[in-house]
Length: 435
Ligand code: TRP
Image (cartoon, rainbow, N blue to C red; front, side, top):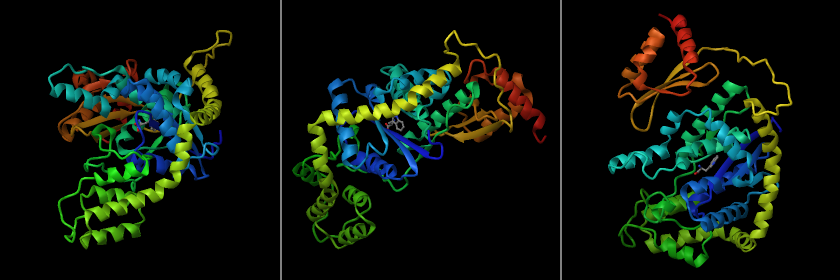
């Protein structure tokens, strides 16, 4: 593995037909990154993830083909990057299990997607976990395996995925702490300039709102859909506001700054909605038409795509197979014929443990105790104020084990066996605090 190179990795879940939002938010930016020769790219079709949301086999298959074809048509070069299908890499589910065993259940309880599902159940008066699969619950671990398997440094994702990358870091440091430095700690890359694209009705363009414009719909269909974008009732000649205009936002995502400025001026000058839609159609078509032929060719020749993905899987396996062998040995899944190593590596405690306080989306205040190795040892439940959280931390530092017991209800144990380590770190803080 070329260790000089920054490794960039991202995946797209194969549950639907790629739309303009996917193109602007995921496909186009990753193609740009993939052309940077200072990086090594890993791009994949997350079809195991698709099974969490989609129970329709033909749809998963079709979407895999469509997303692969879109990525290639948009300029992803399978020769330059490692482009593969997640389910062609058996080491990914294998790694998922190893990570499952170092991931706190409490951590997964707080994953946004899972919490949204349980919150909805609570609001409806249903059981907490009604209709929630273990697959949804485990989603972040599978994603952690995707990322850690290829030692990715950078993971370009949408904002809604940041928490998953943080969890992957947690898993990596837990594992490294227990078994030695095997994993690279990944970082999310959020492209600030990539706007969330609004859909036909002005809400975020998303399959779940049924407001999408497919990326590679035939020209005539795209024109029809653009005509269906919701606008206000201002007549031709009346100045129009760019603010809150889905039409304007979509145009902006495809146009240069200059073109965008021109359209803004046309809005101020009272352009008719019909003409504005025509502008948008022409601008989109200018970018998409050249890719459409290549897309159509791939869709009608699925064998070509299959071959590309198989070659990609071979490349990926050259990394994943030896790495998995290393990891299996690290955790003790070893041939009985080899001598067990009696020497257990001690990780040096270079710096001090730390309490980290933070606020979650639910508005509550949390803290965690992080060991000098970056390993999360203790996780709190939500406090209603930072002061309460701070008080609990002070008690833990002052009183160690007895505070740990007293605060049990407010804490989430991360590792069943971590108590000694927690106490050791609390002790350190107790004797090294300023007071
Ligand atoms: N969860 C991502 C999404 O829905 C897709 C995904 C799966 C992914 N595994 C990944 C993205 C690993 C980045 C890295 O958008």
